[in-house]
Length: 152
Image 1: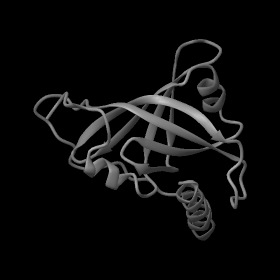
Image 2 (image 1 turned 120 degrees about the vertical axis):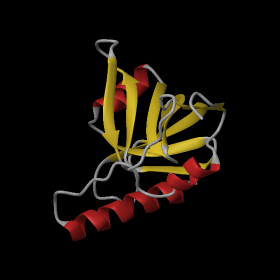
Image 3 (image 1 turned 45 degrees about the horizontal axis):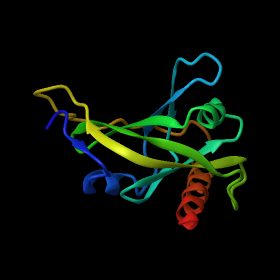
Image 4 (image 1 turned 135 degrees about the vertical axis):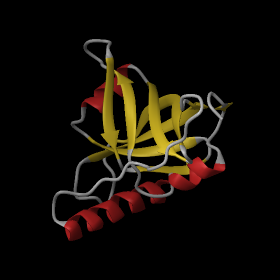
């Protein structure tokens, strides 16, 4: 299935983006013009054409998007690796009902490309653990996801 190109999220990817999920975001650095890659987990797809992302207000990603809205979100799911290309913009300067100062970034999808190399598949998706208070992490994650869902 390598190199298949879509203009919106296919259903398995849409389903994966209904919960907290490990992704990377690639932006263009606002100072150097070079690529900048960051890992994120607070993402949510309200439909198959958009992805909402919660990002710390002080993150370099915010300034990068203000200057260069073109971004690529990389998602490992559905036994493959996907490059989700689109334009991002800051939609809300501070998410409500969340104790952290997070902005809401809305990514409008232009292209979804299966970028897995030929003749292979992902056998195990990335997993991660929160390294701070498990109960506090679960509470914060729920607050952020609820805020993203309530934006719709």
